[in-house]
Amino acid sequence: MTTSNNAPDKQAQQSNKNTKRKKSLKLGFLIPLVIFIGLVAMLYMRLGKPTDIVTNTALERPVPAFELPLLSDTSRIMTNDNLPDEPFLMNIWGSWCPTCIIEHPFLMKLEERGVNLVGVNYKDDIGDALGYLNKGGDPFSMSIQDLSGQFALDLGLTGAPETFVVDGEGIIRQHIIGEVNESNWQSRIAPCLMVLNDANNNGVSLEPSQVEEACQ
Image (cartoon, rainbow, N blue to C red):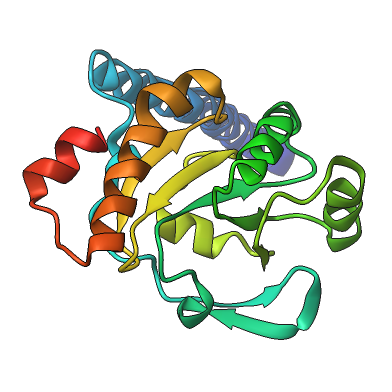
């Protein structure tokens, strides 16, 4: 008699377990679906909007403060005080970067033309970086080691290689995304650098409109 009376209770308990299991399965299915729908909505909202918001973050402000090792002698710490007091190019590079390898011969040509280049070795192994310069030549008046990559991010880096044109007062006037080559050198970088050099040599300050026109 006892067994007979307990049978419906056991059936009810089993039915409740099955119901809970079905609810759990539904929730397990719904959570990824909700996440997926949310991601699709975010992507849809970004359609048609500019993706280069960060490309101008470094312009018209001083080179961010840094204390980083000299690549050729990591016992020496470089700061903003070690930067040239004349217009120069600050180039972000890495031995692991395929486009940097393509760009490197042209940087060597610029060095031969007397262009002052400061290198920022970005997230690189020091042995690989030094081997890269030994093999391809060193176009830089100095290279600092940015192992964490934070300094490059402070500059406004979107991806190596990138180059910043800095005036004699340490203000960033131009941001070149991607490799420096003969084309963008002639059309953009050289005109900007020429105006900055003239102003620096003559001890005059440029109007914002003059900088904007020369360093667009």
